[in-house]
Length: 279
Image (cartoon, rainbow, N blue to C red; front, side, top):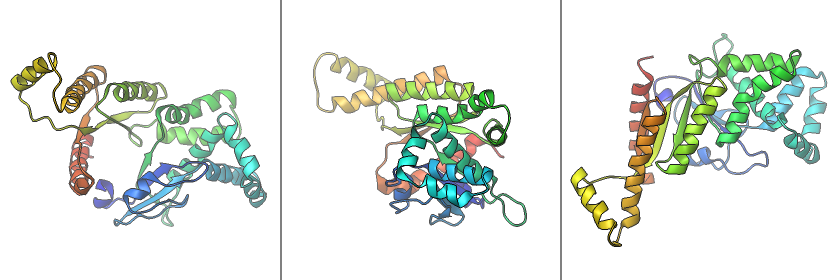
């Protein structure tokens, strides 16, 4: 929203399920599914698509094999698709190549088709498999079309002027632990992290002396609302751990009802711009 509102041609992408299924991002905009080709999402300047391993595999095959339509038909076979998905690195290669194709798209005047691309990445393990893919394949295959495309992808992924990762987590012990591991993994694969979004922060109406009195009470007996009080304390501890273990901007977002999404979007946009600086 922030990028599109500032006049940037913005593409919102989501790593899609190989077997299809609904789109979490699409539902936010009233769309049950997204297609693998960018299409308008609603707000001016904002488009969206699914990034699919199968589409990336088709595009890659078409780029290196003259009989592109034959390969495309073969890859749409369910049996072959299951095989390709199961082979180590082939799934990641497909996702990587589809995303790279979107990054490289240009307009007739040579300018980028999309000035800002936001990629909603999968879980930690899958994300790190993608960001480590270029280095792994370049070690194994020093020459040929795959290394050429891996180097092109690295030019985007490993340049902090062109790409930044923002890690989204919840104010709880296990999610924050995973977020810290993801930040360390991104650093190891040479991907710069812009900051952390700490989502669904519970409202804390208590002053320090009131919290101390409540904690003393909770240590002696059970009271109604104990879980909510514990959640507030857990959120404070999660923030303290983030501050202690990673030197990155942290944007806190409150736990709000869906009807307050517009205000949340405006708040996040403003704070994101502040965290990113004037550029």
